[in-house]
Length: 322
Image (cartoon, helix red, strand yellow):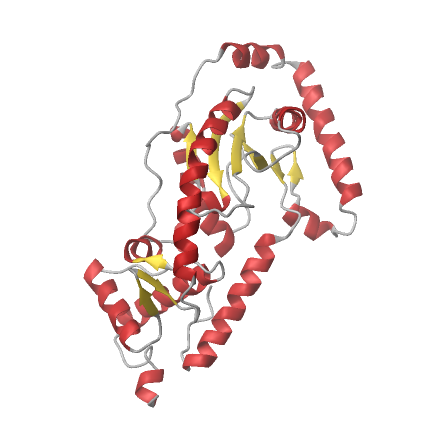
């Protein structure tokens, strides 16, 4: 390859250079998951603002013509393995089968006391699932009742679902007075950008506005529309239990659930230092995060490796920002 072919980011205008870098970094991040993207998905998730769709399409055509990226069956990708296209298509079909169950369980979760908002997160929010995947839920609760709410949901899973998390993985809770997500990085921004509301769209929009920093990573991404999102409702048993546990008894019970869970996690994950525990198992009165496998760190590390390998392979210099 001639030098002019290996320096595609150095012989163009500043806007085109920035846009090419944005496209490449977008494809590289999703390549961590072996996930090729359609043209519309690149438009929605491009890491760089562009003037017009035609500008972006022209960049993609040039990158394909220079064999910097690949295109197959309307999918764009960087990976050398073309089979990831079929893998993605199969995963999309699998996700379609999981969506119905996700909305049914979202409705069920919304009936629990102190649940104010429910969203689908994880791989299903991106429209992809495998046979061994779980459905992840992001739940927003009333203030000072998060741990009581969480405990009730976990007990339901253990008793009625035999502790299976396949359709009922409730691993992230925040309350309505603490909507800000502190992990301001590409992984967290991606989860925010793709999170899918299933109950209380108005609260979802408030949550997204509070965390609008995600647009620093996804400047072209729009919030999810209010399609099939369950509205807030007055379910009798839920309303009764919320009144019953609204006073000091509820506060004491929430504190007890918090202390009991925290004690159990610190014993179970005693190998984590304070920083690791806060990142993977953030446990405060206003938040419960249960990601003990450290997926966030693994993904960001894999992405950095892909960036370095790509730059070396193509003699292309992407900027240092992620």
